[in-house]
Length: 297
Image 1 (cartoon, rainbow, N blue to C red):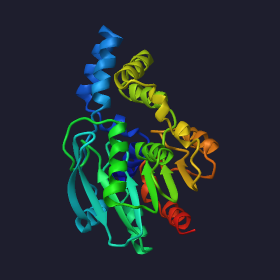
Image 2 (cartoon, rainbow, N blue to C red; image 1 turned 180 degrees about the vertical axis):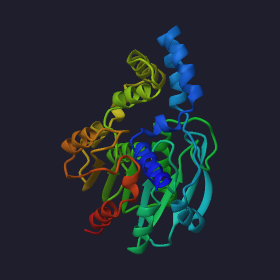
Image 3 (cartoon, helix red, strand yellow; image 1 turned 135 degrees about the horizontal axis):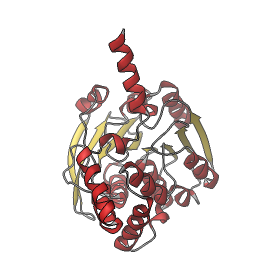
Image 4 (tube, helix red, strand yellow; image 1 turned 90 degrees about the vertical axis):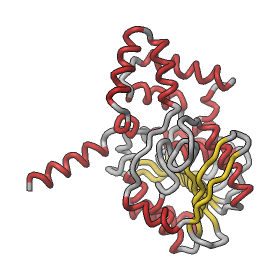
């Protein structure tokens, strides 16, 4: 019994660790601490490089069916000069766009895609630049946005879209600025870019002063206040029915973000869950049932 108990304990503990902290190598944490001690400015530049670098992981068994049965194609997004892997799962003309989060992949929402398939929908998803099977080492939110706009033209139209974490933030932004869909579902989505950088620096075990320097650096680099991309900012003006799903035990993104986003939506519905965290929520049967019910309404 002891090995099973230890395995269960490890699984519970793993679910309580933010994905960034889970994936960051110890060598990165050690280097960051040294730079933080020498100079918060140097630490912020080091953090910026890490912030833009997604981490890969071995594909879980639960995603392999979708991967194996999807039509896969690599396409180039000329506006950002990056290539991505696109997955088309199913053959229905009723299409749903799926967008993964940071360090995720196009098959991460496979359990949701399976149920959509059973209800007559096909899905289009993608590995964002530098994610999954897409080439590259670094990427940033605007790359997600341009990929979504491109796929609407090349693989749409889409009846609805579902985004997880950063994918949800991307879907809010693109929906506000012209993505033509009838319904939107976002899961575990952050509200504030400032909060995202603060959490990232915390997971790197650096001082919060570094977070301020990091945010300032990105604002100057991209020529605008990146809080303009925050979830609640994008939510203002979105009129289509939007289902916001978040878990109260999400250690990657606090569920207060969901309340803030829903407060700005014209036609938003909030679904709060418990004990599912940031990742297990994507495979929960009740959550998936609610998503299907919402899309079929």
